[in-house]
Image (cartoon, rainbow, N blue to C red):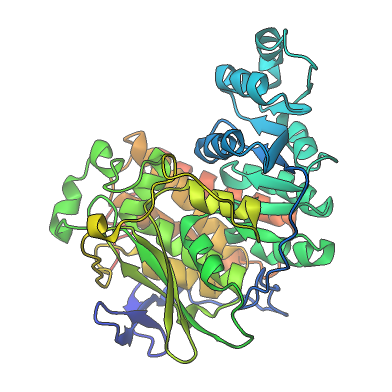
Length: 456
């Protein structure tokens, strides 16, 4: 697919000027759309009056043994007067799950693999009262819609998190959203559903939380532009020519954040930011022309908005995922914290704050994500799934770092003929699996090569 210049597609330069944003012209095939899905927060956030509660807010946690889940439970342990765990779902880490059950004594527990239930039961046999133990997708769904829960933290990675999120929305739970696929793949289905059931979608990702925080009380029509900040990842200071030498160890080492391997690779390719553009569009109803990316190596400013009168509002803090997670849990309340565990931002230690425009040759993921977003429908989910599969194959050393984006683009190109504008849940799940299989088959068959899918 050739790069062509689109005069109405703009980006943010390091000096703040507007510059043209190229796109992958081959992907700008728009689905035949009806009405766009309603955004979670239509360019403003009107917070309700803070009601001081006499008892903790009750939560279910999906993906309790993952990074988001463990940080969520750390917050609950630190603030037991504010938050209470009633149900949790986890993957396969029985030992950690058992420790969580012993510590928090939830009413219900789900584990992905039913074969591990006996091991879990043995590990928590002395816990009283005993929780209800379930397994598989059905177990995660029951945890999500647990009648005692008011809100659900969604930390399950991938489309596996969609079914329990849908169940939680239908049970009228608020969603503390830490699963990107919920909106990137499921936005056209999830957003109308949330509106129908009155469920609030509260972003736990640091960038979208920053936008959500600075939009509190913004007047109707006040938002002009969203500016997402990006660290630039592991190779932000590398010349493009050196990227052909990238190793897995280098790509999975982040200069600022401590994260899992997959998201760290996404940070290196900047695909995480491209997907965040799509998520911001769905969350806040902002046109893609008015969502920009700027490299901010220090990761102190987590994102910004520009208002109609040209003011820029930003949310700042040390790189720490706990704050955006806790804000989704406490919103609209602010929880008082202690300096010992929540260090204050010290500008004398933060030193300089610098910004620069992203290098589109180094980060072809940006233009691919914007093009997929504009195509809409199932294209964004296909991009996300293809990327997840390609990144895993890179981590497994089956493809090279530079092959990730080539596979992603080729998969999106292959999907154009089957693009569905307003997919239902089954269609979303179908094309998620299709994209993963397409990438895996291309590599396994030997039909993939850099020459076949070389990008201009």
